[in-house]
Length: 148
Image (cartoon, rainbow, N blue to C red):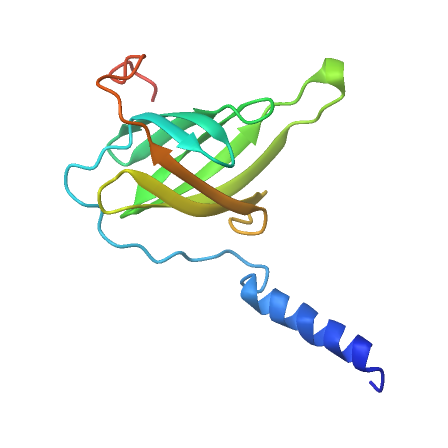
């Protein structure tokens, strides 16, 4: 390759390929979840707006209000929530359903989440997902209501 621009593009594409985890399933290393941490409650995400979360045992389900709204659910692996998300489609508006995967790392105090999301089985390629738990005396819904 004698063209320096083409060489730089090729080197950049290879770097992105390796940084993205070579396109396969990504392993996110986890640490133990601190005792007493429960994710149930209301959260605010700069990326996905209002979130409501229910956490029972190692299972977590929730909703987010961004655009058309959506749901997510997954399992905790230590301090990492591995989840699947869905934004429903709308036939009348010719909008298809969108699905993906993601991960959120729980802070040691259980008050912040930081991670990434992607489409389909890719947990990282779509973008950043962060959230902060809102301080409230009691949630405005019953966290003891069966959801699983």
